[in-house]
Length: 122
Image (cartoon, rainbow, N blue to C red; front, side, top):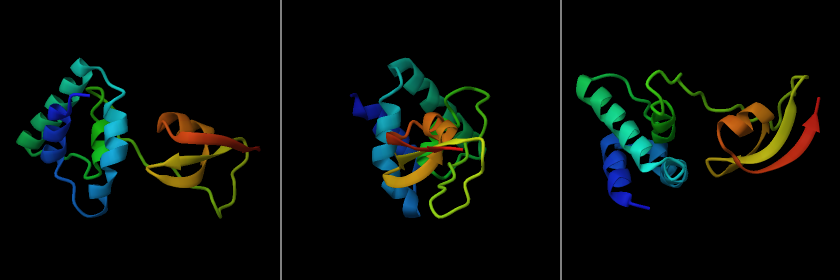
C-alpha cells in the first residue's frame, strides 16, 4: 500500500481524543479503495476543510461520508448487547472498530464488520 496519501489524509483529519485510535480501522477501509478513489476522497475532504465545511471528527466516518459526492452521513451502528432485540432482523456477533458487539445484518454489511457470526433471526 502506498502510505503517502493515507498519511496526508490522517494529518488533514487531525483526529483528537478517542478518534486517534481509529487508525487501524481507517487503514483497512482505505485499502479497499482504488488509487483513483483514494485521491477522490482525499480531494473531497481537503476541499471541504478549505471551505470551512463540516467534516466528521471521527476519521472513519469522515472517509465513509466522502466516498461519493452526495454520500449520506453514516451513523455508527447500534450494539444490541444487553438491549431488547427488535423483531424482523437477523443479528450477528461481529467486530466493529475493534469492539465485539451484537449488530443487525444490515449494519454488519454496511460497516464491513469483521468476524461476523450468526446469532439469531427474529
